[in-house]
Amino acid sequence: MRKPLVAANWKMHGSDQFLETYFPALEQAIDSDKVEVVIFPPAVYLQKAAGLCQQLQAGAQDVSQHSEGAFTGEVSATMVSDVGCRYVLVGHSERRIRHRESSKTVAEKFLAAVGQGLVPVLCVGESLEEREANRTLAVVQSQIQSVIDLAGLEQLTNAVIAYEPVWAIGTGKTASPEQAQEVHRAIRDMLGPAGQHTRIVYGGSVKAENAMTLFNQPDIDGGLVGGASLKVDEFAAICGSV
Ligand code: 13P
Image (cartoon, rainbow, N blue to C red; front, side, top):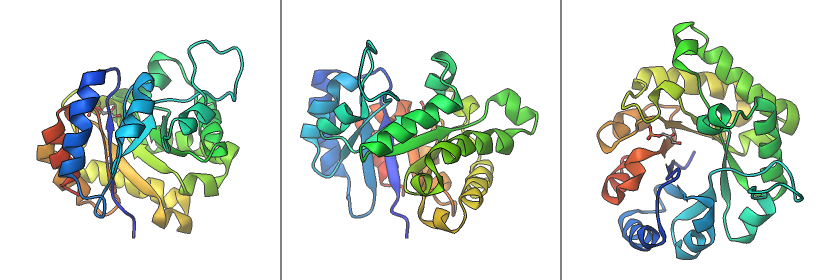
């Protein structure tokens, strides 16, 4: 049985004060026997977030592929683990596109994370152009293959995969449950028998109103939520939809 996982990617939002109201309110609202809930705040708030977690977990939105050194502005996997976090996002499309992270770099970040005992949430997904050219599965499979090539299949099946079609992020356009299910199934097939226990979550304009139909699909094990995760009541409702 795969335990559902719902995660909040705050991106570059939040404040010290926001953490203080958000975390206790969400702790009250969720049941961690039914769903694992992970919050990804900006890096400067990770230590505070980890300290506020009871049932919740905190994770970093990104991590360096390097272990230490002259990398101004970067945060290492050791540091993320040191402040009490267990999860880390790698390969979010905003980093692949805006920060030009290649699939090879993403795979290196994945490996750095598992090397420190963190659980990476590997984000994959196609652009609108790629979907319209019928290249969705090829793109997603190649993003995943880069991680398998560097880290090995077993590390990947122990991680979490987030399918986030780029055209559905922050646009209000959600993949239909059938479109998402098709990609999730293809990802699971690619992982082989061990993939039966791998959690594959969906991201892209998930809201309280569409979460349940998405999470009802057999291969969708939860969600990675951006905008709607900033409203604690709405995010709690999404967590309750699993
Ligand atoms: P939205 O939920 O705002 O579309 O963002 C999705 C996302 O990028 C989560 O990582």
